[in-house]
Length: 416
Image 1 (cartoon, one colour):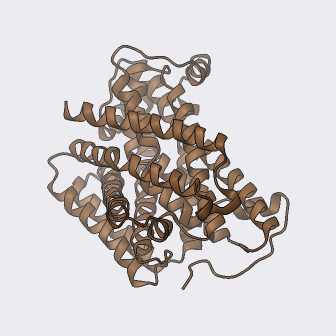
Image 2: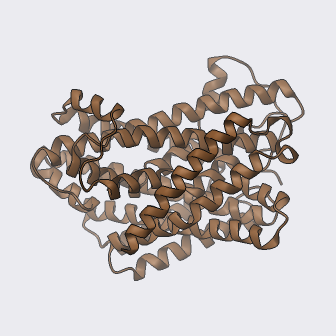
């Protein structure tokens, strides 16, 4: 059964755009996940405002690739996983793309669940592993007992609360807005900063988000046989993606700004999230540390939900099916994503080591997904007249090459 059934006739104007807001924000959750928090805190605490430009650049790349993934879902009525199953005929290549994508979802879920565990430790002083187990249990229960529409509303609420939390933190901190403006638009490469730059730029585009966006955009599906409606869908989808990614840009920027205004200014180098919360208390008061931990908890829970949904979508797509939590393949996909993630957390020697392992696996898999997506969206057999134009192909391949190079460099640096 199709998860988002029915033919509809959308109205036009601002009211209809608001009805489209949602799929992009689910993707934004992956853009502000606990792994990004760690990178942003390190960037701001060590280099001040000078690396804000990398948030601007990464957001631009993210908008292009996520729009391209959503484009596939709208035009074909299939998610990226279903399209790989349908159109990639080489059995080895097909298995390589989809099986490694499932592994990437497990890796992503591990980092997100770990972030929830760290937040619970900061708030209630419970062990990280127990906090991670509680986070995973809550996420699985929520996914199995709620329809997509309700999950979308909850995620939008979480993203809003995270945004409000960082707005409060920024208003409290003594921010140099002149330095922030310069940092956003002027690329800088301070000595020793390349690892942090690679970490943020290379981690922003995550493979599970490309699969997820091509799936959830179909919650706004109207009528694939009406050209006018498809055009309208593409327009509203791009507006939703643009709005959502800009929200993610603002939140990620706020993380670096806070780290620069508070930690860099006082000479405090932050290397992990728990340390960031502990250092905030004496510098900005206990309330600031609590707000930070609550926002991290929301980010951990919401990004764990979307990682599980992505895993369910990918696994269902292997069988040529759309994501439907009432279907056994989607349920197994969620469990295959969440259970191994928790098991790995139980055995890693430290949370930081777990995040390193997670990033390494994503670095290996990301180019596979990006190249497969560009191949499919450039194919007239798959996309018809909506296939990528020559200009789109050039832009996409440049971004793909940039992201791949950054991830390979990050992988090499992790080994060295």
